[in-house]
Amino acid sequence: MTESLFSGLKVIDCASWIAGPAAATIMSDFGADVIKVEPIGVGDPWRSRGPIPGRDVDYYWQLTSRNKRSLAIDLKHPDGIGALHRLIESADVFVTNFPLPVRDRLKLSAAHLTALNPRLIYASFTAYGEEGEEAAKTGFDSTAYWARTGLMDQVRAEADTPPARSMPGMGDHPSATGLYAAIVTALYRREKTGQGGVVRSSLLQNGLWANGCAVQTRLFNEHVGHRPTREDAPNALANHYQSRDGRWFIMALYNEQRQLRGFFSAIGREDLPDDPRFATPDARKNHARELGKVLDAEFARRDLADWRKILDGVGVTFGIVATVNEALDDQQMQDCGALVPFEDGKNLTVSAPFHIDGVAKIAPKRAPGLGQHNEVVLREAGYSADDVARLRSLGVLA
Image (tube, rainbow, N blue to C red; front, side):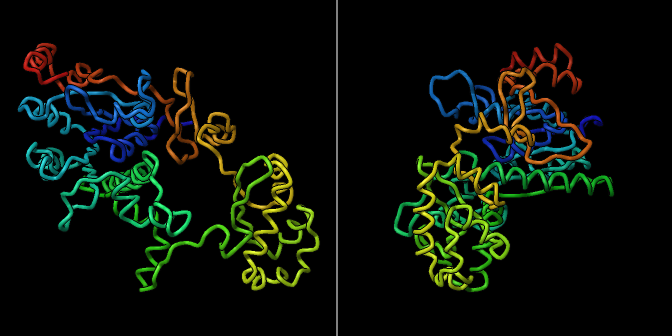
């Protein structure tokens, strides 16, 4: 293994909530020095958004802010913004999702910061983009990524059922990966030209990309209706079914020519390939509802554990409908490096969603306390101990 890919790269995470900070988290997994800039007082509001009231572990914060160092500083104070500007002079990447007017008011716009450091990659993240009437509109992934782009509407169980709420971070984390890609692309350009620059991404753009198949259909002037119910799915071999013990799983048997007879034989229905309703692809499509009923009855005869062995045995692609609680005991998630232990070995965390052969990720470190690294970060930027003490006396530091 070589040293971490981003060793020596300095990233200023001057963002809040999830998408922008999570892009910096990915960089931290590969060794970047990420300085998390937070307001004094309560810090990033994401700190206090854990799912279990009364627990003293900020679960969400540990995921999004692992490996980082916290600088809690008042950016409304001239000395506070001056300190951040000094950090910018030696930084490689600056990530922010501050509203555009706030950036101008605090002198944190791209124009301000790239003038201080022409090699800086300025990564800007917004809800709806930076042009148009809604550029200044605020948004979260539930509103801009999930609801606005049609995803929320399309995953209804039925056309007349209420739309489904998204999970926390469901759009933010994929969006963070998109922003990370933009940052790394700009770093590659900097290697070729020596110049930094500005990269931009938004929840709206990432949500449209996620729902691209349906949206592209509409862009060719086709009407996109609601997906049919499970019972009326057009392909019974790519549907979800329930086992005897109440567990659901979804099949994706698309290589029908090679797998169909083996599948029917494995479930004990050697007669089905010769049934005129199911003998050809067109027949199976025209009688999908009937085939679905047949499969419902067969799958209800055994428990999920049995079906996993049977379907794996004949090479059918399928996936169990797992619960989040099962992730802790899912060995494959650990074997493939998706879940990795914190440096102290006490818990697991979700790793950045890709690997590079020969390049090590760092062992994840616990997320910082508010302002935990104030003094060391400022001393590295050239402030003396007296300078730091003065900032504290002025209320600029937490």
